Amino acid sequence: MTYQNLRIEKADNGITTLLLARAEKHNAMNAEMMDELIAAAEELDNCEQTRAIILAADGETFCAGGDLKWMQAQAEKDRIGKMQEANRLAGMLKRLDSMKKPLIARVHGPAYGGGVGILSVCDLVVAADNTKFALTETRLGLIPATIGTYVVRRLGEGHARQVFMNARPFGAQRAHHLGLVSLVTTPEDLHAVTQKEAEAYLNCAPGAVADAKALCQNLARMPAEDQIDYTANALADRWETTEAQAGISAFFAKETPPWRK
Image (cartoon, rainbow, N blue to C red; front, side, top):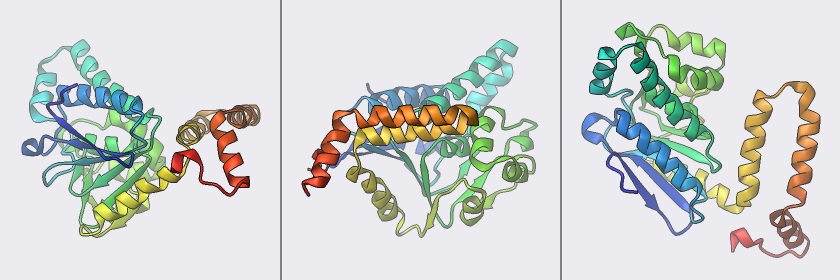
């Protein structure tokens, strides 16, 4: 597929970089970008070459949130039309959230509104220490509703209440304290630190990484009384995979497992 609002760079080592590519619009999301992100997530999930994905952006801004023209068009739609566009954004976030492969954000510039929503569905977020974040919807008389599902889950209710209502920007260290950002580094070291985090997954069995991610997501959403049976079955299923058998055999034989060769 040819993308107009994204760029995909695939490296030989299995790390793929997915870049938001509307730098002239501060990578603000319009309908086309959302649809392309869904398509890109599908493509990379099914790409055997790709084992980890770095989500980054062109230009000075990571993501300014919703595109102004897209928002103006929403304002002119009837209630059904407004809900359709909200569902478009929700569908994009859901698809990114459900990716089987690790999704690591590399944040070099401001992330506002929907940009915070995107970060909330990443497995790991590395941010430059001069980066600014904000949920600015209330300044426009709106609310961070569609992204809220993921932002509240990421931050927790207590932390979310601190940033949902006042629209005040906050820095990378505060974002780290709130749980939005995983690692904070200097702008000069941002690429290297993010690359190191992505490379860690290359030492692990791809199928096990995918199953471990699913395990984490399912346990977070599952009643406690169901977790014992679920985890026992999940582990038994994994023991029976050819990947696990190859990994255990390589360990005892003191050999390199096939995914590291």
